Image (cartoon, rainbow, N blue to C red; front, side):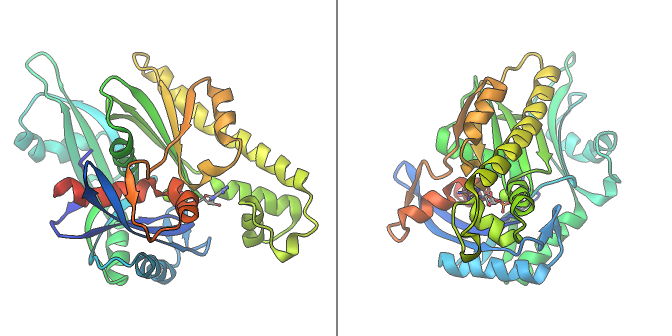
Amino acid sequence: MQLPFLQLRSKSVIGLDIGSSSVKAVEVVPRGNGFELLHLGVAPLPHDAIVEGAFLNASAIADAIREAIAKSGSKAKHAAAAVSGHSVIVKKISVPAMTAAELEESIRWEAEQYIPFDVNEVNLDFEILQAGDAERPMEVLLVAAKKDLIDDYVNLISEAGLTPSVIDVAGFAVENAFETNYGANPNQVIAIVNIGAQTSTINVLAGGVPAFTRDVASGGNQYTAEIQRALSVAFDEAERIKIGERGPESQDVVPQEVEQAMRAVTNNLVGEIARSLDFFSATAADMRIQRVYLAGGSSRVSGLEAAFKERTGLEVELMNPLARMMPSSRFESDFLDQVGPSLGVGIGLAMRKVDES
Ligand SMILES: Nc1ncnc2c1ncn2[C@@H]1O[C@H](COP(=O)(O)OP(=O)(O)OP(=O)(O)O)[C@@H](O)[C@H]1O
Ligand SMILES: [Mg+2]
């Protein structure tokens, strides 16, 4: 997908994934018949800096952007970022056959009936999926994002000292990372499920074209909250316990309680995502999902892949956003193993520059 809302040409662009748990800064360059991961920096965010997509603590986020870039060592002055959530609408629509220029003229009017916001308050973009003719309408992928949301990103990135040159949609960025690493198969219907800290994003791709997109407001924080509740510990402590680090306060932790809490959340999360996939299958009877790729930091929860397989009966695989990225020797392999799963959006954004060159 090539649908950024904003695109300026520039030499080096850093992909900035502003997630609710951390900012990931990624720069890649083409190398041989693959790519080299040139710069990578990750900076944690306080867990209440971004809540339900809202920037509640913009200066903490700007600090984390600066920190991620400093850690990455990148000298890029331009950034590509991605928006997601309820203020972003991605929809396949049918319109009477017309030229791209005519569609450009009329898209605002066409869009009005499909988006739940005032059409004057959104940025619009589109891609023609299938040209129509006298008998058949034209198929168009309509993308709308609230101007307020885009302004928030532009302001934040500027505050961090960078020029925002691409604002993409997070789901498209993950798809881009997928296709870079796994190729685009014109005959395959796959689902990519990116499970972050606050949000899980579901994207069904049919032959490389988005067929269904949905964000669910569940992710890794649910595990943390459940451990907090079960053990009466603070968020940061529960987070450490979740990822298998034991802090000084958790000497007496009963592993069964943690395991039980984790299992309960996995069941809920898998159920919620599976219901979205069921909904897609029920509404698109001509398409059958062949494989599910799990991405995002929370795809590392042990047993998640198996639970997903069991609930859906589908082939499930973990997506590795770095599969075709040659890492610069500066990176420790432990570090890459740890952060790799959460780099789908960042790699996809970093590719925006490579795609253009
Ligand atoms: N080894 C691990 N086991 C379990 N969970 C993990 C592990 N490593 C990271 N996580 C979880 O992954 C989540 C972070 O993933 P990611 O970086 O994809 O999210 P994000 O982009 O910051 O959040 P969001 O996209 O929801 O705003 C956190 O909830 C973190 O606890
Ligand atoms: Mg994320």
